[in-house]
Image (cartoon, rainbow, N blue to C red; front, side):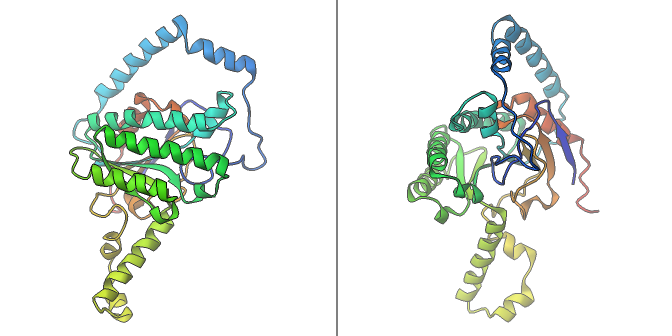
Length: 302
């Protein structure tokens, strides 16, 4: 199982589970950019500097894309969309929901890049079970952003599949997810798993619970179940049952851990950790992940 970390952007705060960061760790204070630094950044994002930068970027993007082998593509890519709040703070924005919205706006681009690359399944971790403990003044707007994003994905024609403990979510959010899943169940092309209210441990517990209920309905005793239990029996009850396990897991914002993301399915996944915050994730970052994946030698323990 390979691990690679690349990128240019620094980090100032550790993520606390799920798709977003929490408080600073090990006593390190969060660095807030000065007004001068923000002004310099704004100048660099506009005018002649930006035009030259964009031209160079496009040349490099084409170079990386041309270097990718066409016969080594991950079927399933999982993405931990990390760094929305840190991006907002680095931009001097007091309301971190601007970061969540900017991150949500990036998703359609990612799905288009994935389609172009030949990826068949993408799992997006939008909200973890731990995130549900956030204060209402942050959680409620975030849930609304997620609802609008899921509706948008359905309207765009993506095959949306909710994965997560929907019973932990507010009724309105759960209904939006279910409606999107039902409305797009026959959509062709890329399958988009939207992980909302998702936790890897919770998923395994739900899978075991579902298996026990199923076997009990058939009159199977606990002893009989224990004697014949195989790994595949649990896999058949996961949220992503019927789908291939993720070949590649990408996490943005510099954190090098899964935080509970697809714990069961990622046993043989390749990992790619990117320093850039999710709202600033570019196509070239995606292509670098694809290039890194293509360079790995997957042995599956053999």
